[in-house]
Image 1 (cartoon, rainbow, N blue to C red):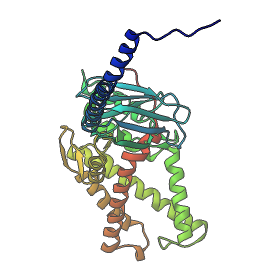
Image 2 (cartoon, helix red, strand yellow):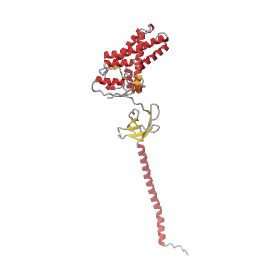
Image 3 (spheres, rainbow, N blue to C red):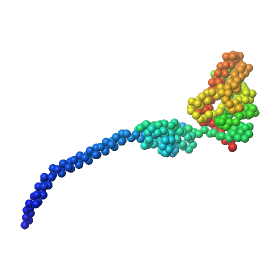
Image 4 (cartoon, rainbow, N blue to C red):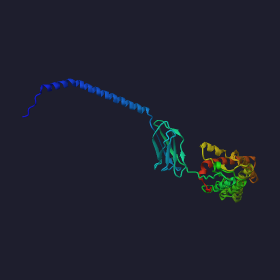
Length: 360
């Protein structure tokens, strides 16, 4: 039979001693718990303060598009910083989207984008703020301008001949002559007198130029200006007047005066710099030109050519379309057309001009 053991006196003493010390042990445990709790609270406060004092990282995102608004897939996007010296790179997805995370605020950055078949694009240098999400939006890549550089070395006449041979192939959409534009920049060699006359005659006798004269005469026929008669007789008179206007303008302003004054009749494409500087360059072209000595000077050739052409028209225009008022109004119209043409050359036509390369 099971019998419980009797409690001895020593056991009772141990139980009594444990019971007496229990409140002290509980107090000690409670004190230790409070200490650990205080340490944990202090540590959490330190972490929170550190997080508050630490700058929040920034982000950059954008989308790469082509001139038609379609996404450019596989474009290389490089985020560079002169301060860190550690560039980040990314490749655009199917949507053309790219993103950079965890960027350091207060640091200067620049985004460079390249893609096969497009001109390179670079953003201005910018600085990110704490936690800033910079949206570059839709970055549109333009088509590269076809530019062939002929190295300026050796015989200047030989170089000018090579450059002019390339210029004589320049056509907008591969059709419309665009011979009077130089894409050589500082490497452009001056034209000789013979080259200036050759270029003027080539433009005036080009089939597309003649077709343009015929179209312009038809428009004048519909508008009943100048005051010729109607019918085929009147159309032939308007065609002859338009052809004479164009021939006198290009021969006087593009060959005769540039040869006498030693000025270059071509438009020199800038293509680089800010849009404002390119606009100023284009709008000043009818009034400033490059001399055969390579220095910029007043464009007496262009201004004189427009005035001479307007004055010569008094010889064959109807009496009602002659006189000083018509001469100066025609001059103003021609000058305004040159300003618009130069701006289009700088920003639009250059992208649409096809040319054949010349072996160096």
